Length: 221
Image 1: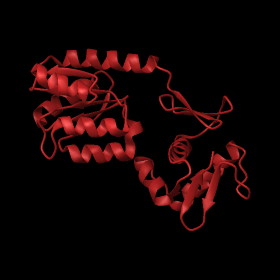
Image 2: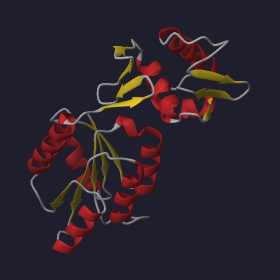
Image 3: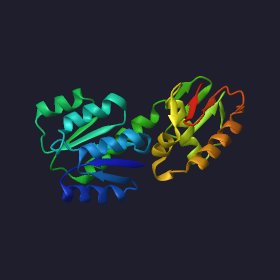
Image 4: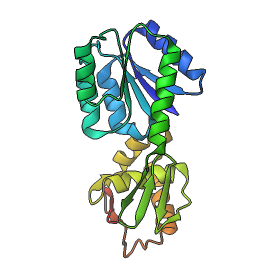
């Protein structure tokens, strides 16, 4: 599982990242909150949880928490030296799931992460969009309750189209969403063609994915 760490103390950042990696968590660290918010805007589904400091440059941690909550329900653990009751109340009001006051033992952070992720995984993660069911935790998409056998890139492209239902998305928007799995325009068209075949969609008379000439695609489902 991948965790986002937003912490401007580089010593603390390295310590936590190394400790979390020992428990098989992949960590991506940010010391600038605006860069972290941009990363979440483009690749939010890559992360299972966020560890967030409050005293940050550019933007206060409370504002970061509030902005994340406006578009995502990803779990957030506040990790901060500001540990008075007032700060904790504000953090929970803004949508934080837990609060750790520094200094603390890294093991305590592991225990809180494990507990939160265990609760999240127990929740029903499958959502319905038309005749398609999406389970983002498992990275699976179903059609009429049958699993669609998608590659990783096909899954990400189809999810992006579904999440932008009835909106035109350009090939460059798809490429940006793919990030590390970036494909050329020609490759994206090929992936779309493969998805259409797997969901029994006719490109000449589409029911689900419509081509928008010169721009990209639109999901109609």
